[in-house]
Image 1 (cartoon, helix red, strand yellow):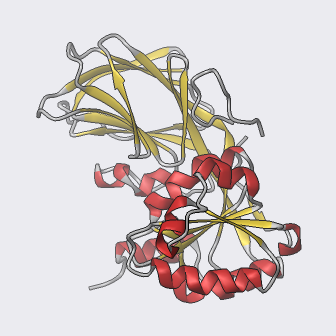
Image 2 (image 1 turned 90 degrees about the vertical axis):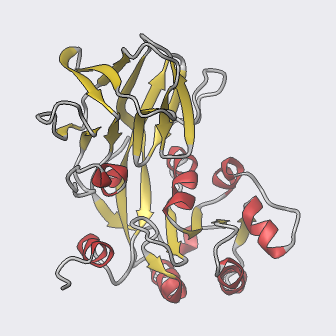
Length: 307
């Protein structure tokens, strides 16, 4: 893994794989970082369950600012510092909370355990009711980890690592965006659409799914291009090899187009400007539920087989 690039405009850039394996024994974990969705209904309850469990095992505990606020404390740390100090990060909340932590955890090789506090979450797959059971399995070295591919989006000298997707889109007005796409230096097509989603297999169940894209298994290495409401109906979602280099050049003659990263950060794009999407040099180690497979989660969240 490489450390975050400083002085180069890189947010968090760091090899990804697609294999799943055993987590290291819990005894190798000396400090646990915790991040929470502050306004989640069960945030305080979850923290008051989790902290005694960790304290009973003499774990060092690093709380983010959200945790500190929920508990009425003032010793909260930024997510970047949480990742630097921790051997495991526990996310209490939903997928948005996990996405915010993922880019910092991945670049430093810190595994993440997502505990769902009630929202529709594909990444925070452990229910609060199973939190201690999952941690006990982790303690015995019996949890499995899913290695999730990440992307690097680069605009000029500025780079961003994302777990789900990078999306080019207009800001407010209902106008079509025009852009050229090249793959590995070869021209693919000019698109006229409301936008374009470049996603990982993990991100295939996020915005891309809502835009009609396919669901990809998270254990494959691939990039997914999904046009949003394309003007030409023959433009369909496209799955590309994971090592592809995608270049997108904005042709729209206005300055109200943005590149949005994991739905949380934005970068304005100017006419003629190009951004690139490649596989990131880091991956996210995501601790899995002891009871559910990826297909169990899909079936439950998407209501497959229900009448």
